[in-house]
Amino acid sequence: MSSPAAIDIVIVNYRSAGDTLGAVAGLVPWPHGTIWVVDNSEDGVEVERLETGTSAHPEVRLLVQARNIGFGAGCNAAYDRSTAEFLFLLNPDARIAASDILKMADTMRRDRRWGALAPRVFWDPARRFLLPSALPMDPWSLIAIALVYRMGASTTVAAEYYLAQQRRQMAGAKVFTTRFLVGAAMLVRREAAIRAGGLFDPDYFMFYEDSDLSLRLRRAGFQVGIEPGSTAVHEYRHKVSKISLMVASAQVYYAKRFPRFYRASGRLSRVEALAGKGLGIGSAAQELGTIDSARDLRDSLQGRGILALSPAPALIPALFRPLGQAPAAFDDDDWERLEPGRYWLCCAGISPEGQGIPKLQDTRRWATFVKPGVDR
Image (cartoon, rainbow, N blue to C red; front, side):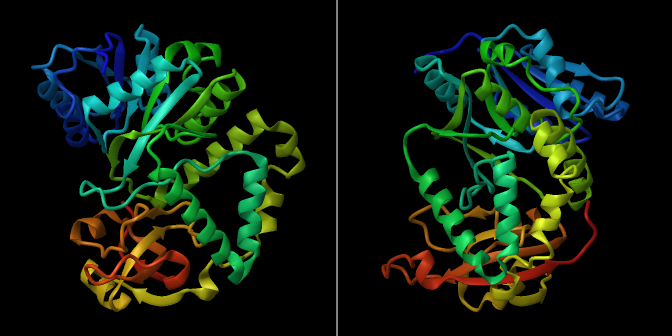
């Protein structure tokens, strides 16, 4: 494996100094470039914690913003100062080993068609559940997902297909192309970003900036994809409080990148109407009611384990068990990682040891439950 001399890392911090310092600690010493920590917190105590926690590492540079400029602009602040061949973007709550970043850089050096790569990402530190690849963000996919909701009970067919496709895709050993990447853990080639018009479009405060970059990279003639030989952990939390930001960014994205569709769809309102009030897998799902703990969830599933779980009633997207691994029960740490809200899941019987692994299509069960509490 080569030892790149020009890979900078960017971590944008917003009142999460503990997570950010944990991400830094897993990467230092970093002899391959600079680790840029961009602070958007508008909080002197937060800055002091970051300064104290990084002072022993000369390769770490702290960029303190006077105001919260958002994720994309925060990354741009480091990108504008960096001259590195590659820029690795990392969320504060994500973890990756240096060797996994170097592997992605080696892959991109061998094939200059790659504009950006992401690792295979697990949801939990125990690496029992995988996060999916990014959903395609284009008019055709938006309409297709709306139609899935329109299908009612038949949504389970689409959910099964999606889960099977994701499990097969993530099980391979070779790098593969995708149409879009998630910015939580992503290696970007500087040359490609320049040819695509820059790193992130500052019109996005948060969300969709990674979809926008992926689209621009592909339109500039580059490929984006996933290097399954590199792995990371992202303890993603679905916060209901951020949905309004997602909706606002979706408006910006489709207006900028698909303007004719945006106008024809009535600023996306006709797509929403197409989906109607579809319940997704709701009509096929067993209602488990309010669940207060991982133990209560295990009891409610009556011996079945989880194959996939999602905050979306169509189970698109969903975190899922890797191909070849049996359904699993949530432990207390998994439960703590779930934000309050409603969840839908696909579960199956947990095979006794030595009895083989149940097939998704043969043992599927669908369920929904609510985790109580206040979104944080």
